[in-house]
Image 1 (tube, rainbow, N blue to C red):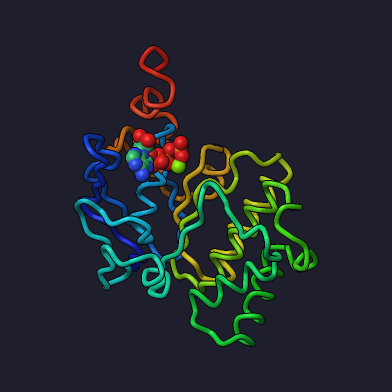
Image 2 (tube, rainbow, N blue to C red):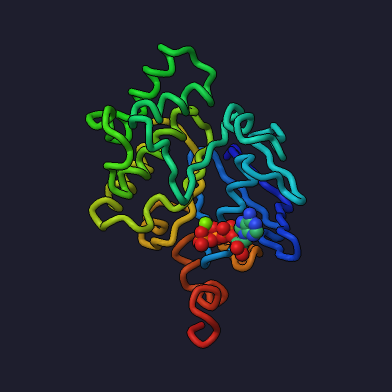
Amino acid sequence: MAVALRAEGLSKRFGGLKAVDNVILELEEGRILGLIGPNGAGKSTCFSMLAGSTPPTAGRVFLGPEEITGLPAFRAARAGVVRTHQIVRPFANLTIFENAIVAAVQCSGLDRAGARSLAREVLDFVGLGPRRHEYPGGLTLAGRKRLEMARALACAPRVLLLDEVIAGVNPAEAQEMVTLILRIRDERKVSIIMTEHVMAAVMRLCERVVVLDAGKLIAAGEPRQIVQDPKVIEAYLGKKHA
Ligand SMILES: Nc1ncnc2c1ncn2[C@@H]1O[C@H](COP(=O)(O)OP(=O)(O)OP(=O)(O)O)[C@@H](O)[C@H]1O
Ligand SMILES: [Mg+2]
């Protein structure tokens, strides 16, 4: 199967802290890869390096055959890798529609009319179409996460990095989010890496999971095996539970 995104030796230092330490990731086309691990494991930092929000200290990133290591975020987005942010910060003084238009203009370089029509389409896709003339401040957390996903989709990604889009929402919304993620993969032909603390969603969505702890890759495999791996249980719960 073709590889959509690959990272090798991915590392990030913040002063003396090795936030990400020599991590290998491989996302196959049309798949959903889970990137899990306890708080502070380095998941979001990996996403930052894959999507160009921060350059790696070491390592290389490939989108298909093309090396994209260290490209700034807007160029990584135009190449086809886009992330969502764990803490969503839409422009509060712009409507939901305008927020999506800004993303479409920035990423795709479309003209005004093209950006408007793409923005409308992605908002319809995530279910925010009827609310597009409202302001994001009126949305629930799940709604703001949908807007964040719409903004990412307005970049027409080939690879989408979803940073905790389910954690914190209620069970009904979580179920809808699972369905939305599957539709993004199947209807838009997007390959996905997702970080998530909600294990039920990871089990449901991911064919493969990579586990980080303190910046290091400690396990990789099928979700069903991963949740029984003593190293993984220890990373989440401490040694006495393993
Ligand atoms: N800009 C930064 N400067 C300094 N340290 C940072 C920076 N960003 C992250 N870190 C540190 O790097 C480590 C990894 O953080 P990261 O946010 O990647 O973890 P995470 O796995 O996404 O955690 P969570 O599940 O809580 O979102 C943490 O120790 C964090 O404090
Ligand atoms: Mg994080």
